[in-house]
Image (cartoon, rainbow, N blue to C red):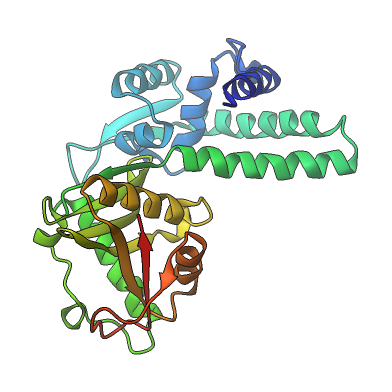
Amino acid sequence: MGVVEVRRFNRVVTQRVGALHDAYLSRGRPLGQDRVLWEIGNDGCDVRSLRARLDLDSGYVSRLLRSLEDAGLVRVERSGDDGRVRIARLTEDGLAERQVLDERSDELAASILEPLDARQQERLVAAMGEVTRLLTASMVRVAVVDPRLPVAQYCLESYFAELGDRFDAGFDRSRSISADNAELTTPAGLLLIATLHTEPVGCGALKFHGSDPAEIKRMWVAPEARGLGLGRRLLTELEREAIAYGAPAVRLETNRNLTEAIALYRSAGYQEVPAFNTELYAHHWFEKEL
């Protein structure tokens, strides 16, 4: 459903922005090289992050960088802090070329808007913003991860820090109902981690209790990933995992200050129920049959 429309959109966009030409923006290079040049930026970028941002394999990125090095626009060097890390930096010619690319890109954007009247321009810009958000959301990956891994610990520590900021009296994890690493490892439970360009942007966990309802824990979305529908996606994935493990329902407790989370749970069909535990920081308890 919608595949035909997506393909038609892709064809129109690639043609309109000039991606089909070998010399993008009349600079004698294909779009891939120019995008890498732009992404490196004025301050440089480590090659690993460059690959992640562009979702390209290491071999292809290496070929693009070699082409730019041969053209005298980029130099790749070892980091002074860690010899295993390679940093790509623009040369003086590269910085000048990036400036030209910015100017040409502005001209291309203006040429797309110019034939349209003011109302059409507003509609196009608004639609582009929505498409950008949806395409970004489609690039988020969600997977079960060992809670002991650094990516998982980053999410959990970020979750604890946000609770500390938002709760009236702060948050002390030692006084809260536990959901430690062992409890978030199968078969006792699991931890989902969401990543965007390999960077962690959200998490959610389950604790299983046999034939009793599973507990949802550690729901968190990074501020930069909010507005992408990621909280709902994590919640849906947790429900699917709970069903797969035979749980008849899922339940959770939450704090009154987490108003966005409360709205999400209610809109997703969770019903407020009497307190089913003695969580110190909870004001609301929810349950949903699966």
